[in-house]
Length: 393
Length: 226
Image (spheres, helix red, strand yellow):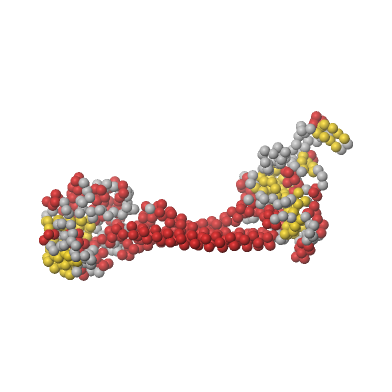
């Protein structure tokens, strides 16, 4: 048998292109439906788990799916902004703890999530090193983001400008990394967390500049009328918050009107949740409250429908490919008739000669199955990362 | 006592299932250790007789005794094992496997019949044979990269690897140029002389007949092409 397998492998190695095509075909036939099933199962579990752990999300009226994906996975499609006063409104009802989220900016491809310390407790995120957010301009980085950006506590992360051609747009803010989160196998691993007010500073809603009362700023002052000071463009603007200049940072206007992507509401019980939902039922209401589980169930139903079509297609294509592979094997047997006759003439046993042809087919089938198993394993290991990346885009 | 005839044919009649071809040989003995050429017109049954001697084909009646064994009495698996151990076959078209190296082609009989066991001694013998016929520097090459003469030398090594008492060659020089023809014949005859192997060859080439101890003309037999 060993000799037969050796000859079969030599044949397959010699006809490597044909073997490669057959192996690829068999691998895909097996992998596509199974891999897709694994991916869908994994995405279902992941989507459901994170959604189930998030009781309610409050945000501007619009697409509930966009609101949920942005709040859970920090997707790049930002929903219509809501106002900070929605967080204080939830708090004032006493029906739940509000956790504001402002996800608009990025550090390279990593979302910058403006929030409060309640978020870390709510998601059960722990620090692997460093400390929690303490002052403006600091950030805590998710495990994968820290790896990708190559930063640790004490390093800096710079926010990416929204458009390099927009001179009046958002300027980069240099943020000190004060902590790195433990790996949590969730979207939080890829994020850069800042205080929500730091996110507003990135947007330019809050800013820091040279003290106009200081003598060295005298040349920059154009006029003074009581508390109102008008300065020219020579006044020094800060692009980093430090202990020395933090007092120069301030916000103009009423913070309650500042933007948020959404607010996660965490009611203490089901009754509070129901009561809170009731507060947003008015037709004149400008915000919506959604249950992420319900939204994700709808999304999953769509995914499962698509999956069943894709699997049906894959099965049909698989059968056609199998038939083609069978034809290739049969044609190969016919073309090798003379080879078999030679082996018979010089004394080859029926078992050995028949076994040689069979071994080649079995080797391709086993090879294809092993490759498919390997791909399925990789899908099960890294599928969740791919799903999260997909949800972020 | 060893039979002095390595091939003994008695009252043989062979017909193909289809067609009118018929081969009839009343009596034919080939002495052990001799060299003999089968000549005759195409379709006279020369190759058929080689197949009958090797047990590849079976007669309708009569007996074919090869190296003391009546091959007509053997079962199919027994005939295959008999062939792989006692008969070396050389073909006009060489019949090498394109996907095997020269060494693997020489070792082929040991890879396709469990009656033979492939071990280090066999490998050494294969390398020695390759060296003797001048192809030891090509052992890793595939047949597609060899000349016609080199391929036939590989086929000869494959045929004699088991040290068979009988070597059957069907037009062994039919596809070779004069230089390679002489070289392959030298190898076959030298090997037969040194090992005492009987060499039976089918040929249409009358220029080489004087090398054989005996020439058997098939016009003597009742062979008819359909």
